[in-house]
Length: 115
Image: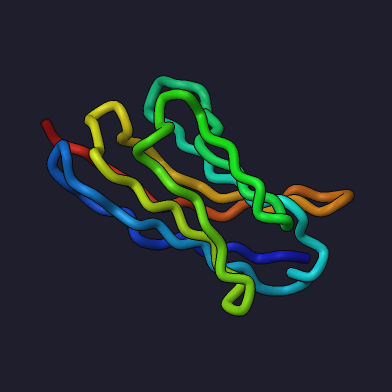
């Protein structure tokens, strides 16, 4: 099993920055992909960013150039640096860890961007 705990959310004005963290524990050796998702009230969950065990990254078009996903293997932590935040970036941000068989989710951290 893998346990995930997100942190770093909060309220920020438009144009500001936040850095989210997702700390993994348990059978972390089996993880090969980590993803950040977000969900705003009344909207479907959206994939924001992905990082693989080889360091390959991918981003939703809506966040390209503003968000950066990175990982610290030694600390079993994945980060999401969010710059130039917009009100439409608001939502519950959750990380997901994938191994060959299972997908593991954290409980999320709330991000609110005020205009």
